[in-house]
Image 1: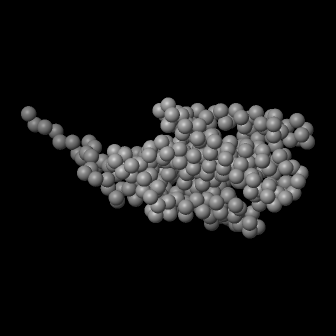
Image 2 (image 1 turned 90 degrees about the horizontal axis):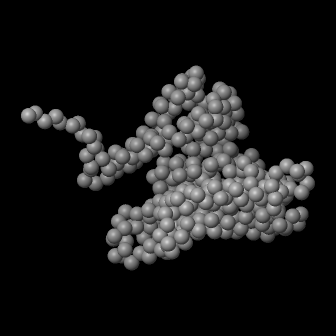
Length: 358
């Protein structure tokens, strides 16, 4: 039976992510075995090949490319989660950031000028901020549930993505195929690598800045104290003079802006085009990253690297071992499942039930 602890266990708080990763490997191996694959080889391919395999020199830079948007989105989500504000629609904000950013860049095509990319950055952040502000305003003004509203807006954003891919941003020289011009071929709008072959682009730099910003905010600023206090003791926060409406607008707006930036850096760099299948679920995966990192900026940085490793390793496993993509997605989902399951032990301990003798 479960018995509530007098106070949360610090040991389990820190041990839960590690135990969850180990459990995911074990049960993921069972899943791969049921699919007829060597479980040791499959797990080794996912976690070893991208770092130390024969073609690691190619895969390592991809860890930065995959990890940057996850970290950037997860940092924004974590601030709201700490305050009990649940933004589940980062995927939609990511899409809108990409649309706004690409539209701003393509509006100047074919002009080459230094100011185009900074305008795209601001437009991307604005797009994500607007999309996140919708559930924020509805929550503050009408008391709606931000979980449902932000989640439903993801589907609206996906429809808008399809619409602009087939209409407003469609490449006029694309022979009728849906999708925008390739921003990788438009120098002023291209988020190129800062160091050739390193995977380091402005999105990676922004993600690192976001980690530092979040750490300073949470540990050295009164607003960060209000965020932590609201999440840990809502009644005490009200007595301390915290303005709930202002906090909702700030947390949702900031998380949306960071998700929008992630979308803009992705569409102007690794992806290159606005297309119907542009979004790959980074906004939802970032939720796993946020909780795996214990909502701590440094933890999120490490968790983002781990999740990027499963992305790259999963792609290698699909090509080399023939694992289906769905199996890799289930493997990644197991991580959140076990994280939440073992997190129960932070607040509860398992006690053997005693049978009473009549």
